[in-house]
Amino acid sequence: MQAQGNGLEIAQTVGAWTVRAYWPEGPVTGGPQRLVIEATEGAPGRDVRRGISTAVLRDFDLVRAVESAKAAGIGTDEQQHELAIKLSSLANAAKALFAEGGLSEKYLAALAAMYTTVADSGSKALVPLLAERLGRPEQTVKTHLKRSRRNGLLTAVAGKAGGELTDKAVQIIATLDLDQPEETS
Image (cartoon, rainbow, N blue to C red):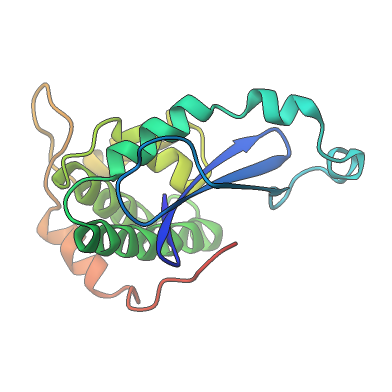
């Protein structure tokens, strides 16, 4: 999920392609107003050269995208916008940190901060939302969150989604440059 101008973006990876769905600012009451399909970074050249097929559109999970957008659409428009900006900053940092160092403490702290931000907002289906935002499979995100907990960056809440950032994670997050989220298209 990402703030996009005055709206919201949900991205899903479908094979070699990333499908981005855009909603205008305000409550999500239906499907997106725009879809953009682009080659996923690092996708095999042979798949990209073949181009977009109808299978990409068939495999795009519109229902899940709408549910994720609705789950993110809580509070006032201003609160939604602030949440989207914060998640965008954290997601951009997490992607860059993973690309630089894999499962580093900094990446795991950024992921934990994303998780607590979404959980604290009251959103449902946290892992699918984070997976879409990071362009990673849900199981991978779950595994990385478990690692965050094992590494002492995120506390657990018995039987519930959520948790709290530990002091260690807060210190790591304070060292990250989160002021200027990058816009992607």
